[in-house]
Length: 238
Image (cartoon, rainbow, N blue to C red; front, side):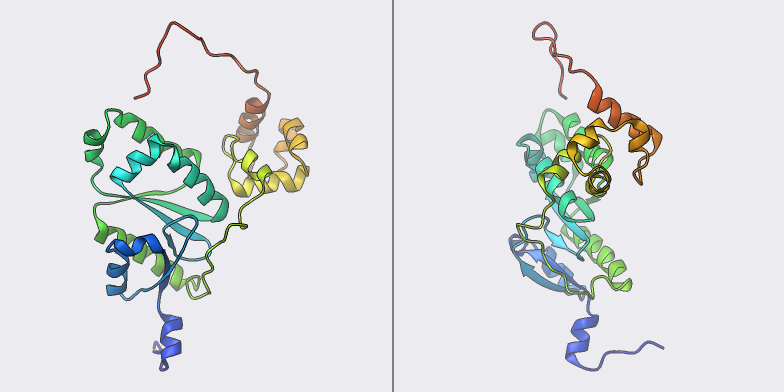
């Protein structure tokens, strides 16, 4: 038999809560979450729009903002920072994706960018038709975290200093390397020089590095740069 909390303080402790960025006040998503029984706390988040635990953050993008942020370069910068700061970041696209063709004459570039985020950055990409569905996604994820006790712990938004150092930033540019694997590489080899000089066999000694992934990293580091052709052929970007 479940026990209901009797005091207001216990009710607050048991209640699901999320931290929303101040800029989300103008959207109806926080209100929809509150209608679902979620306690919404506002803060100025330096990255992400909704913090569901200290590990999980959601970056919400409407389709027009998604298109604009891909072409001005913001999206990949945001994704890199999210991967550095949070263990489980999620990109949530809100709106009708078929409208992309009305917003740009390069729709394939949008699909390519989302594929790069899902595969290259290993970040889940969710699709919501409208704000209500966005709230449903956030509620469902928060509910799972709440059942595991995560959202009951104090949620502390990361501040400016809580990002990995520049060496981590360098290593996550390697194919198949995220923040966790980058830290393991640095812990084992102690410096970027040692990582770049490591053999395939040495790389494979790092937890999470299979032979295929080690070979890919080794080839990427040691392959010669081939200068692109300066004239002649034009490459299509769409």
